[in-house]
Length: 99
Image 1: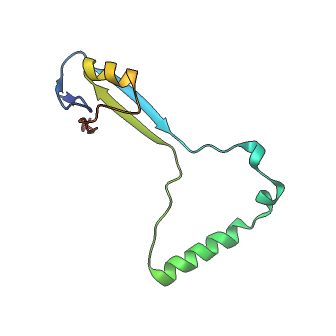
Image 2: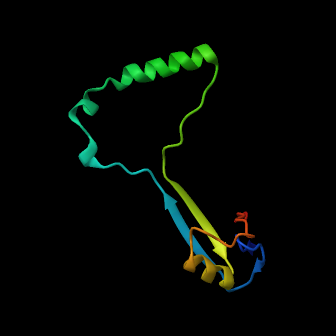
């Protein structure tokens, strides 16, 4: 059986549950692309990065893809989230349930 808890206050959720789905993704403006952006030799850049990784032994990729978040709320926290989605109550801390 799946057990849901509120991602803001941590209380156990019964039948009444609210869900927020958020996607965060990089965006680029096509108008800002210039002709020289298409002329770059990306294979040479990749070869250079691989060479650096082999030399240093460090391998770290920059996160560039879209990220999807799914949050579960009780009715009170859902109302609070809808009023101000970017600033939950100061004493609250967002925790993610294992759904």
